[in-house]
Length: 282
Image 1 (cartoon, rainbow, N blue to C red):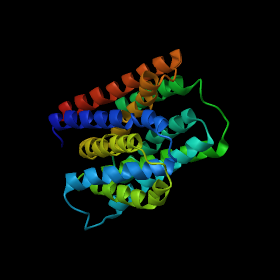
Image 2 (cartoon, rainbow, N blue to C red):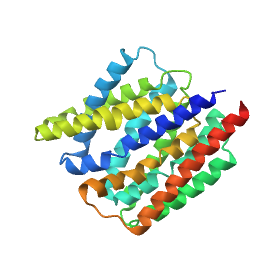
Image 3 (cartoon, rainbow, N blue to C red):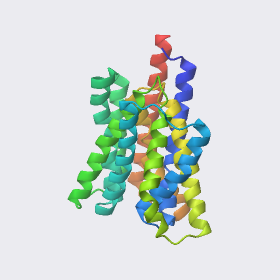
Image 4 (cartoon, rainbow, N blue to C red):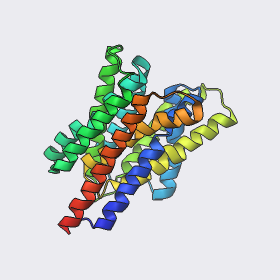
């Protein structure tokens, strides 16, 4: 059983990952590139970070490792495509239905049974997300909404696949995904107008927003159940528009602010409940 200190450290790692992930909205808005070009450029820098971090290329491959890499790529693609076909609020909200699928998959494949605190935390977080995005949700963009729901499913499979590698090195899945995405999107990058600012933004996105974030994530997911990791990750969609509001001037409503606080409360409840359960189990 993981020690209490390891779990606390893992929770902090996952929170740091979510905070770094949340900065994407601000910089993607600033950078006027095709989404595939952004994903490819970001993945190029992230691959460099992971190569330095791991100091090797994967030489042995497992089903969970390749599944996590494939689901990582597919989740990004589905999410980016859905934002083109429906509202950003719909895309984020529907993708974060993932905990529902994580509960089922984690129990079925990993035998990780959710606790009562997990259920309460999930209910609180969904309530907060509804408040947060409620005034922007719509029924428009049917196919975009469908893709966003699918991205929630692939995100859940990705989370469980990473968790299944707790005795291995889940970072290898990220490196595979980054290399494939960078190679696939290279032709798109070549068509863009290159500036110093655009490459500085891509460098930040690749090195920090994705690179260091997923290093934190792959360390944390080894010691935290898949559902709890996903619940902590809901800090991302809340913080994302907050950064845009603070540094880009895009307004936020009162319900969004209240919803954000409710989500934060749910995440804290999940983390505290997990720490308490771990302490009682030691």
